[in-house]
Image (cartoon, rainbow, N blue to C red):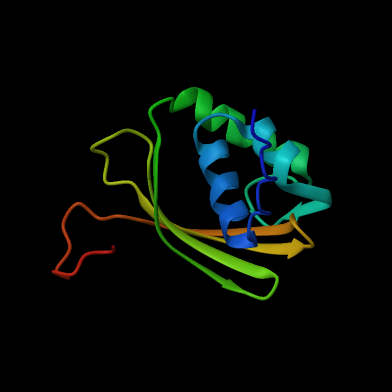
Length: 131
C-alpha cells in the first residue's frame, strides 16, 4: 500500500472559486464551514450584516433555483484580494447576470465579501457581448 501525499494548500483564488461553486450548488453551509473565517463580513446591501443572514439568503436562493448555473469567466488574485467574474443563470437558457465577487482573505479564510451584478440583456448592440 502506498502512502498518500498531503494535498497542497489551495490558493486564495481557488478557495474563492470553490466557495462560489459550493454555495451556488446549494452546499451553502459547507462553503461557509470550509472557507469563511471568524468574523466574516459581507457588504450586500439587501441583507442584514453577518454570515447567518447571507447564508440564509443563499440557501433560499438555492432552494428556489435548484438548476442554477455558475460559470466562472475569470478570476484574479492580488495579495489578499480575489475577484471572480461569473455568469450566473437561475435556470439553464436564462440570460442571467454578470456578477463580480470580491473576496478579502485573512490567511486562508474569507474575511470579507462584496458582490456586484448586472443583468445580461436579451438584445445588446455590443457584438462582443458581456463575456
